Length: 247
Length: 315
Image (cartoon, rainbow over all chains, first blue to last red; front, side, top):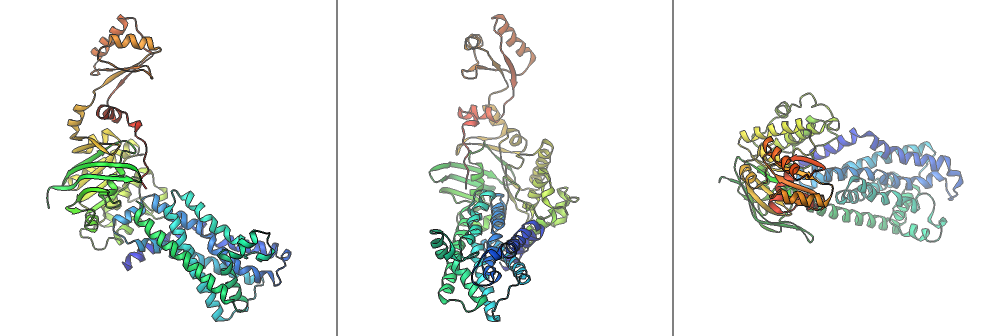
């Protein structure tokens, strides 16, 4: 079983390597958005702290979400082109096929975050995080990446076509903009503000922000972990049952 | 091991309230080619999915290679190879990498063919290092079949293996199927094309809206079919009426204003037909000679044409 997982993971890595446009998109777009908001528009936002310090945690989350569309598309094309059926008839285990996609998605995320943080430092990002805080940041991002990855894989498996798979992942890409990622929720209009305050990404961003710029609030951290675990579990169970049922 | 490779009795499957297979009985002898013939939506792919353990039947029993598909799925899967309706190849890998992937996922099997052998056999050596996204439809199909042969399965399912291929690639696929049979492999083939079933299959079953409407050898089926016929199209209903009165054994289609006259395709009988029309001063707008195709088989066996069967997307 373990060797099957390795074979599938190697296949997913080859896909990433052979499809540089997708990776570039996942890595360069968040960095571009960062330059856009921080360097071009940054002076227009007054958030009480240096804008790059405010925006970096939110953009990290954006970087995780940005690559998801292509994950959904690639899972869906495996499903609709019959490649998953082929694997099933060969008795390749469900977890080997699905884990390969989730891990490849997670590693693309980490690559995108590394690039983003690099750009942030160039733009004057000066976090006051200790080594332990940084470990917390990495742990939360891995958790978020896994949760988003499983949810996206499930959506990719369930979608009728690669196009609708990409559409299904779109809310995850747009949701960060309606959170405290770019500006604080209290500066938003009535209605959007309440949504931004209570939507799942806000506590995750606030936890990252806390870890990077001082101590995080325990309440945010618990909410952030709960949301990630919840989404991850839903995605995991949904993906596994869709994989088994659909032929 | 018995002489039966695949047997199904009373096989039923419905998706929600749409019945796709309504009591299918099949019996495929070891080392023979069996063809399931039918139009889109007849239930061919669903049948293949049930026989290959991908979809669970609602009722009936199915045994493949002596094992029950419902309870001994793993043993069934170990004995079979499946080439689906769309070439299930990895576009981003090369041809060689696709085959290597199959070998890597198949470590336990005996009689494993090497990648190089398969590339050679399917005439893919030159293209082996190229990304599959550059392959033609025919090459994809060949690679798809080569991937299915890794692990040396004794029973192979081919779901519409030549749909969308040009005539030359079709013939190439046919010759590969014949080679497999010569090696003693059992082939279960679905197709929409009568000539494909005719060319390859020992036995043919005609599937229509979830029922098997006829089963037998190609010769047996042809006996039930209408032979060659002439189709005449008229300008007005009055002319159609007149012609129908004159040509006794013809069948008419009021809507299309056509008359279908059975014949043997020989020039003498054609001349007799035209002379008879001339004698009564009837002229047709259009004249064509037809040899039987799947549509005619369907009309003969079910009383309706293939167009009446609606597409069912089996998800």
